[in-house]
Image 1: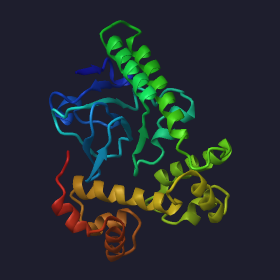
Image 2: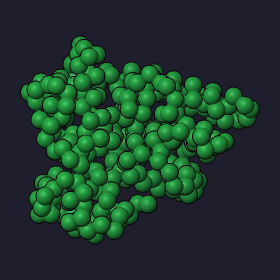
Image 3: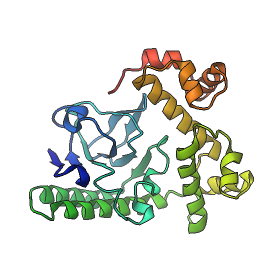
Amino acid sequence: MNFKYSKHPEQGNLVLTDFNCASFQKRLGVGDYYKIVWAKDNPIDIGIDGYSVSLKKNQVLFCTPLNMIQIEPFLEGASSIIFDREFYCIRDHDYEVSCNGFLFLGSSAPTIVDLTEKERKSFELHFMFFEEEFETEDHIQGEMLRVLLKRLLIKSVRLLKKTIIDPTMEQSKIDIIRQFNLLVEANFREKHKVSDYAKLLNKSPKTISNLFTKFSYKTPLQVINDRIILESKKLLLLSEKSSKEIAFDLGFKEASHFSKFFKNQAGFSPTHFKKNTLNIY
């Protein structure tokens, strides 16, 4: 199964696939894609940002364009919806289900949602609707596919909200978490401290830390560090820059500080990572 909607550049691209054909890159080409991968029939392993992620059956993974993803051709048991910003995110969607929304908050840590048996049946039905719409080529096909995508994202957001440590957490406080993540995305190269972002939010570092404690098992500092590590891996794998150049790009005054940071976070040196990780593009 491999369906692709791609009418005009300004309308973007949407792909529905089970990976039972050519390689991921050959089917999509070069581009920045959001990826929703469902381990539908059995557990699967996926390469993300230089490490392996194991999805249990009926887990759904949400990745941003920043996540370097490797999916072997002819992978069995998975279904996926893949789309770019032009297809969905340039539109005026509710912020919770936009590309800056709940599911795509932290590009450094792809979101995983677990499906119950009831939810699995709902996802199966939804994917069936996608297949039916791909077979109907008319002038409103793109709009219908966007409606289906938004519905799937809304359903996924509702499932994800059930995983919040404190389910009574006020929406205004959840919004601060989201704003923090967006600020990290925009400023991680220059700002490496929680206090930097707390100042931008007009909050104290303690307030930010307390909110994260209620929201997830990650600390705000982990969010910052994970984003820096993600960019480090991407540059090490996909650019010709040296570790020293990458260190300066990411706001480290000394290359040795960057190497120490990378080893503390990733468990090995930048050089070891680059030599022992296959270039997945």
